[in-house]
Length: 99
Image (cartoon, rainbow, N blue to C red; front, side, top):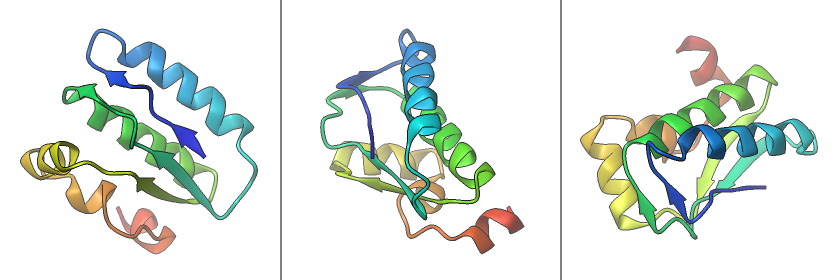
């Protein structure tokens, strides 16, 4: 399981992405990559780019993608940016292959 840091903003997103990419590369080859967002306390739209990149990485390795511990503010941000279906709903490789 990948764990988001407590803060993901434009200023620290590259470092957070590097950490998550490293964790993804070392993640056991389970069918689903799970990202835990429950500890995320301070964020801006950069977190969406980070999650979308994690999703791409999971799909590139033939795995599904799921986010756990989703807070109301994160849900609101995904809706505002129109990526709720990509990040917060059940993921399947068929959808990924089509998109």
